[in-house]
Image (cartoon, rainbow over all chains, first blue to last red; front, side, top):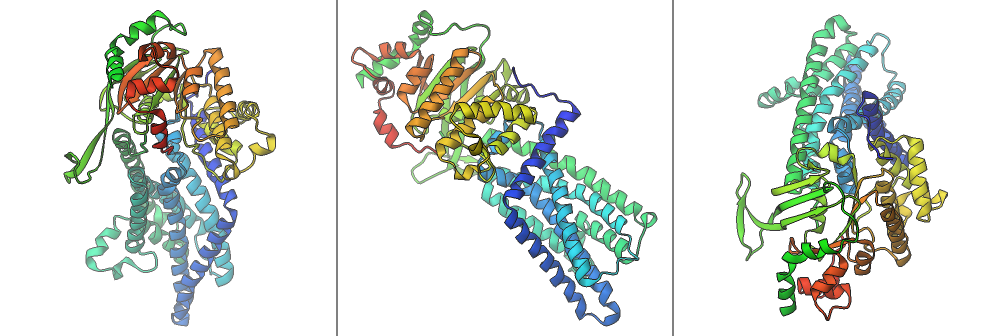
Length: 274
Length: 304
């Protein structure tokens, strides 16, 4: 009996799930590393939060929460970015990239499956860190719009998937240099997005870049929700803007990826010997 | 040298020789149709190389023609062997057919579909085993196969059934199937690779040196399994190999590549006849067409 996959939405979801399942199984096999990563993330967020304790007593709680929000959101967004951008690097290192690329699947399905795992994995890790941090700092969340902040997290995921897809092109074209370049991109986003400080402190010539980063909007809204209890009536316009950025970035990322894939197939960048 | 020249002058007649005594009966349109195919790569130029300028920065590059004006057809159910030294273009040809590379010139069609225009439709019906068993080594054989099977639309129960049957046939125990691949020998990993390709029941199977570097028992297991598949004649197979007896034993026709060019293509018997009266082994055949001793070629081989 021949294998002809049914291109129905159910089949596409099943294919997406293949990537989620494989990555989850890999995380299980590297469980000790997962524990180390989570431990490091908790300590990192605590260390950054403790900087808030250098503030005057009246501002201490707010400053600590301001910093912790930055640490948590950046932790989540960088996990998502890493998972998507490095998914190609992992496959190149293992040598499986040609098998994945010659499988009868749509590139959109392949990449969305990778993104789906990134979102699920990032959420779980962020919630674990949040629980530890909330316990350590006794964070004053009773008057915070936590659901609003989670909504911001979900919406911002879309934009970071798009950025991840664009970054994933680099390891597709050159394994080592591509992986290096994705770290540089990540570093620039960290610098310009106001993760631990308002973007107004950046040199003027850098500030305009912050408006290009979806993380800037995500942080601004998360802080508004958690520090000022801002509701949907306040956040909706910014949420809409962030959604629009994501809706634009994902197809752009996919388009660039597919173009790079064709370039790689034309020039033999995937692999060549014999 | 004379022998080689004589042989190459007869290459044009090879098709006639082959047509007279086919080892299998070709039916219907060809499964693979390659016509005047060229594939060139550009590598960093070394001193003394002929240089071409490439890209926006006009970088100094050396042009390597990996596949040079190759033309051939493969019929349904046929097993075509491809022999050649390292860098002769075997793997590039396999990648062109498997939709992983686009030709620079010429036409590559699989099932009548152009590999550049219709890769998705072709991919549903083909699979490949490469010289390196490429897997997520931390995962078990079954976990890797579960992932691969899902990409081909197979259900988990079906994957377990098909992959389990193939692996059992290749001598895997149940406990081995759930062990991490990083703890397995190369031969065992290659058997998992064979299972990955065969479990999707491809109409066209591309076997790129599946037995290179395997211990004698693993090689025999894989060859026997491939032979069983061949007997059914449901799957068209391209087999690149360094194992001359393997090529002779398994292939209906054998192509010899040298420097990206197809220098011979016919049944093993016809190639022996063409190579001359003093030819005894298939290694002699290779020498007659390529002008290199097979042992010398193998000593220079890099399995990666």
